[in-house]
Amino acid sequence: MKTDGTPAASLTAGYNSTLKLIRTGGAETVYLAYDCSPAIKDAIRLAADQNGTTVNETMSMQQLKELCGIDVGCAVCARRKTQ
Image (cartoon, rainbow, N blue to C red; front, side):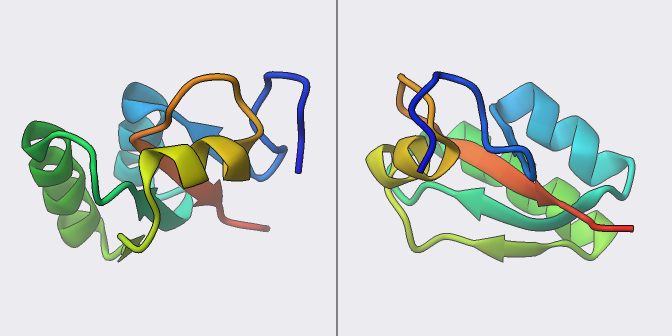
């Protein structure tokens, strides 16, 4: 687990970055915190559904924070597709 405050290399953390990655087809899996706001959930689910991206909703914002290795709670992040 990273501790330097930057997302792990294969992850994009944050709403805007994740939404952009989904819409451009670069997201392999989206991790959506079960305890984030309904507005974020709805927008991410819609974009993921429209782009055929898998959504995992089994982690909390605290767990996503630790997964990404960042210093603040994380509502959503995505694993980038490997080429």
